[in-house]
Length: 278
Ligand code: PAF
Image 1 (cartoon, rainbow, N blue to C red):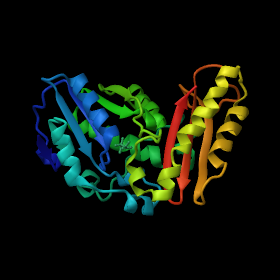
Image 2: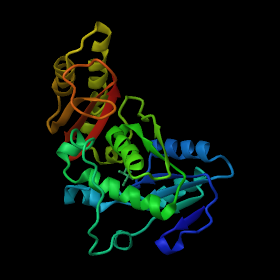
Image 3: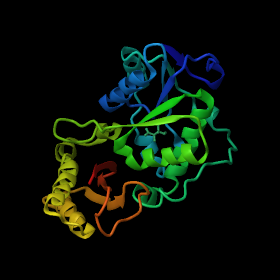
Image 4: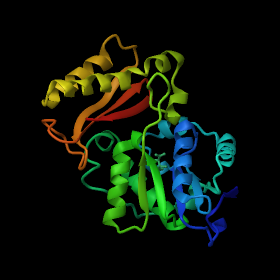
């Protein structure tokens, strides 16, 4: 496996198809699933590229960036074990010029959900993803559906800027109790980790209303809110809970077509997200 620590070390002859798995490190089984999916797409003669870059531009809170887990050595070992061909780990001082002044802003899909509560987040995501595509020139890239809004926005980025990259969305990987895998799970205290499966349970309980023919969004949201807050431990706070159209991510008053029920929940300072399709 080739370790590429700097832009200057990127080879010009990466065998295609080349499939990028962009990450911020602290890799877990969810990332392992993305890397395996990338190998399926690339085939044995193609290349699987993993980027590990804790992108400062997409953090709206300096303490969140400071607390984000950093596990580079074990991340590199996992990539090697999973058969990645190359891992790109640029420094942020090299990746962003000190006086960088150009960003990429999506203006519709980023209005709600994480876009509403994390100002500038998707600008940071779009900017870093475009830069990664530029420097690594992958033919395809994989993203997890846990970050559903991110995936939808990146599909728009690719469509609207005519980028020659195929985007693949991969199903969310969960712990046995239902908690969606996330690097942030590592930073939960024991009590909050034991409780955190309630997020998925709350979304599923609301989704079950579909079987009754219920269409009013408010009823779905009330059900999910009830399950999120009932007997909740101290420190739990809902950041958002929204029902949106699955294509354009705009708020839905009624569930009549493909919808997404999505939540972000704080356990003290640790913010977790999850979603279910309805
Ligand atoms: O999902 C993530 O880990 C990040 O948002 C990404 C796509 C690697 C961009 O920094």
